[in-house]
Every structure is written in structure tokens, then in C-alpha cells.
Amino acid sequence: MQFYGPLDQISLWGLLAVTVALIFAAIEGGYRLGRFRRDRLDDEMEGPVGGIVAATLALLGFILAFTFSLAATRFQSRREIIVEEDNAIGTCFLRAGMLPDGRGPKVRSLLRDYVDARLEVLQSKDIDGLLKRSDELHRQLWKEAEAAGREHPESIVVGLFVQSLNETIDMHSTRILVSIQNRLPLPLWVILYAATLLTMMGVGYHEGLSKSRRSPAIVVLVLVFSLIFGLIADLDRPQEGWLKVGTGATVDLRKMMDELN
Image (cartoon, rainbow, N blue to C red; front, side, top):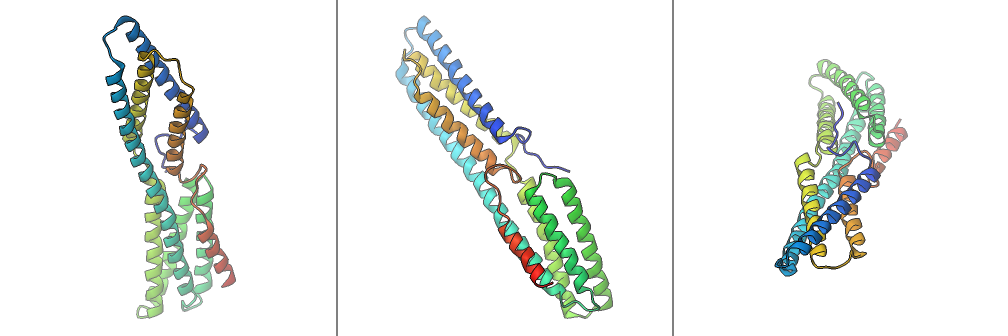
């Protein structure tokens, strides 16, 4: 079961190009409408129109700032949840070494495989297969915990291990929710694009109404807004893009596991 956002079918470069084209088209459409109105109506003043355009630009800036903050917060949450899960796995790995009846080496081997699967999830787009692998490792680890619990029901060491393993499994579910499922909703993207295109139509309309030629500054305006859209989309994509959640903590955990082998 893959979890896609509304724009994930388009690459980031493709999304940037589409956004640039849409904004340019909106400005051009507004410009032509402004010229049409200017040639046929002499009583429409450009001053009030300029005030409306300025107000809508300010509102659009607020919406973009809100959306960027939301995407950045979720990106930071992904980074934090990975570190928390690494800590839980590390604790489980250390306590596994104290399990009775020689279960420690097998459990530790399973935990190493689990960390390897997590590293692949962070670096690969094949999320489905890797999540199934993680679930299978969960089941194998819990079997070992159940067996140890039945054989040593009063063991404090076994109890501590079961507690840490349970936390590891819970953290996995939380990470899936935060890192993969918790994306910017489609209605927010629709409103964001609609507000941007309508605002840019207003900019073009005011330019056509004021009898001015197309200013090169429009190019700067289009590129700035398009880059902001691209940055927001990048922050919302956990598995691709220019801004990725780092794997340093997980790599360090894997090295620690090898050292304690």
C-alpha cells in the first residue's frame, strides 16, 4: 500500500515547470483582459484595482507562509521521529544481549536486519516491499519475546526487553504515520494554486489596464512564486527531492550494532 500525495505523480522539476507555465498564463490572460477593458471602458480607474491587487498579493503571501510553515514542521517531525525510533531500537538491541537461553544472538541478528530494512526505506521508493519486510521482522521478534516470556515469566530482564520491543514496534507505526501518511491535503494544494492563479490574473489585469508594457520584473515574480511552490512540495515528499531526511543517526546505530556483535 503506497501513500502518495496529490502531486507525487509529477517530478519536482516537472511541477516547477508546470507552475511557471500556469502563472505566466494567468498573468497573460489577466493582461489581455485588462487591455480589452481599457480599450472599451474609460471609466475604470487603475488606482482601486491596484489596491485590490496589493491586498490579494498580501493574502497570498500569508497563505504561502502558512503552508510553508506547515510543510517545514512536518519535515522536522520526520527527522525527530527517526531519531526517537533509533533510540528505541538501540535500547532493544542492548537489552536483547541479556536474554536467557541463548536467544540474544538471534534477536540481535533480526534487529540488524530490521535496521537495514529501515535504511532501505529511507533511501528507496519501493516502500511497499520494505514495509512488508519490516512487518515480518516484527512478527519474528515478537515470537522470540513471547517464547522468552513464557519460559521466564518472572524475569525482570525479559520484561525490560519486551517493553523496549513493544516501544520499537509502536515507534514504527508512528513513523509510518508521520513520515509517509501525514502529507499536505489535496484541498490545501487546490486552494493554494487557485489563489495564486487568481492573484496573478489580477496582477496582469492591472498591468493591462494601466497602459504599461509587460515589465521584465514579472519574470522575477513568477520565478519566486514558482520556487516557493517547489520548495513546499519538496518538504512534503519524504522519499525524494532536494531536501531529504538524513540517515546519519540510523547509520550510527547500525555501526554500533556491528561493534557489539
